[in-house]
Image (cartoon, protein in one colour):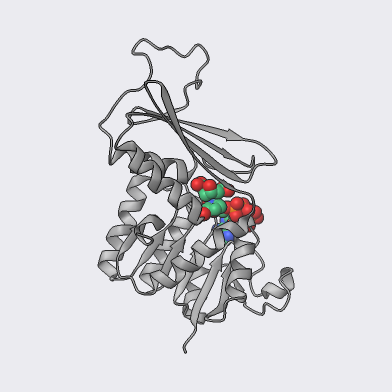
Amino acid sequence: MEKIKVVVAGPRGRMGTEAVKLVMNTEEYELVGAIDYKNNGLKLSDVGFHSADAPIFTDIEECFNTVKPDVLVDLTTPEFGMYHAKTALLHGVRPVVGTTGFSDDQLKELERLCDDQKRGCIIAPNFALGAVLMMKFARLAGRYFQDVEIIELHHDQKLDAPSGTALKTAQMIAEERDYKEQGHPNEKETLSGARGANYEGMHIHSVRLPGLIAHQQVMFGSSGQTLSIRHDSYNRESFMSGVKLAVDSVMKLNVFVYGLENIIE
Ligand SMILES: NC(=O)C1=CN([C@@H]2O[C@H](COP(=O)(O)OP(=O)(O)OC[C@H]3O[C@@H](n4cnc5c(N)ncnc54)[C@H](OP(=O)(O)O)[C@@H]3O)[C@@H](O)[C@H]2O)C=CC1
Ligand SMILES: O=C(O)C1=N[C@H](C(=O)O)C[C@H](O)C1
């Protein structure tokens, strides 16, 4: 059986470290390289990954031309994640992107590029299967409840707010519910930001605290009742079965997919 050749971008990061381990420990995968903005020419074993002899590249094109991967797993920053995903598609490499913080226009640009190149790409705001189910359950609940607030809670080193998961959840609920500006029509914030961000009238609240990893509660309300749907990731291993699912799935895709809920129907 031919192995799937994988490159990981962001290998020193909290998620990248786990992704490197996943690829190394998966029989059907071969870790052929890593992309970082430093340590060019070193091996992953030189920067603390035992027995990982994959080379590190700072130039993504050189990486792709040299090691010819099948899949790029990107866990970096929105700015570089976008550049990496575009470059991958132009080189015939299928991107699996966990990086969050892309704009709608950037997602559309990637979709167009997938169509042009006839190559699959998965953008997954959350790889944890429980979080994907939370989003699906929230979409279903949105059919029956008009009022919802999303509270996402993350570690305080997170760069983007709201989280990619919260934004995707709001987008999925919006597919089911009619637009509604929530709260009292005359409501006023006496302290700016008190009501959180507003997505089609739904409010999103971002909590950042040391000690947290990744958590979200979607809270629906109607007369005399509330419904709360909550997911908690207590470590970053929780995301790895979803990364594996995405890598396996993207190999069979020639289209753009935004969200793992489209894979686990
Ligand atoms: N989809 C999902 O399930 C999940 C997604 N995420 C998302 O993944 C991304 C990474 O999160 P996390 O691992 O916590 O963040 P980290 O900051 O721990 O990791 C990001 C890594 O990328 C490195 N980096 C920055 N620029 C480049 C570049 N140009 N090329 C290669 N590497 C680069 C950083 O280096 P340095 O530290 O030196 O700047 C760092 O090592 C975020 O967007 C986050 O929201 C996180 C968890 C789950
Ligand atoms: O930065 C994180 O940590 C996470 N980011 C993703 C997001 O923005 O939704 C996924 C998960 O919540 C962890």
